[in-house]
Length: 384
View 1: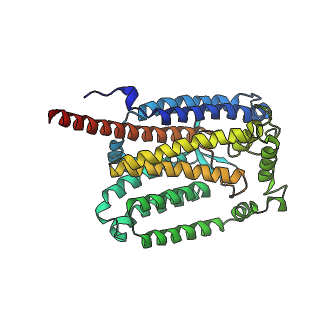
View 2: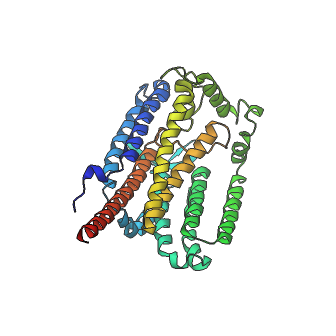
View 3: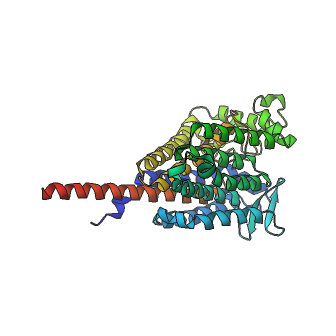
């Protein structure tokens, strides 16, 4: 039986993904051209030119990965996790690692600068999905079923904290906990792991004064309006200025050096100022469509590895959205996590599109299996 390329694709997922990514390019340019003008190059197109290059690379990667059978990632899992660990070590290597604002999270490859922790997020999901899908028969046993992969998770967590990057490390812990839950682990194991995760978060959060200030300032940003509360207050002003329909595309005032990181972590505030609440609802609505499709794809997948892989991707993207929106609105501490498909950042855009391409491939497989089943039933019915 032959299948149509068009019918097998999850067009709702694909179209929504690229619509949101294209919108992200528009907002990156709008929020970054002023920074580009006063930068070293004096070029207002500096950031958007880089982002377009990354978008082109990510788009090619998307359509390649979308046709790559997701089951093969099971065999590639050991290589993927090994390369992830090596990449995290390389950020500390002189000549390769790049220090920006006191953080060593990037590797300099000449024309491109990559952030390994973004790739590690997906690598950990593939690894955990592969391991826990094989341990289904004894997932209720903590030592034999649940514990072994957590040693690798702990090692990766430590490497990321050395950068330091508490936001990314925390998101990996949360995804791990959710995948353990969906793997079928016992509640007492989950509660114990949650307790360990919370303890680790508290220990690392309290290990540096700047982290304590960042984690507590969101509760009352006006207590230090020119210091730790400055960014959130400027975000409030941007959102208030935008109102329902916004000031118009390109007309943000806050992006003119009032709001720090306007083109990265706080790009949603610029969306709110220029396009209003309606613009924000569009962004969140599009993300909602992608996440809903992802949950449905994971639930419909009959393969345990594919199901866990889909859920892991959805959880990771959802956690990033929650962390970013929470920071912009002052409901959560600032973590430095970008808004998927919208914020400036090549590594984030590339890995998000690759992740969604894997999701699209799982969906294609689900559609084909469903059609095979329907065709078989129709054949049997005709024969009878």
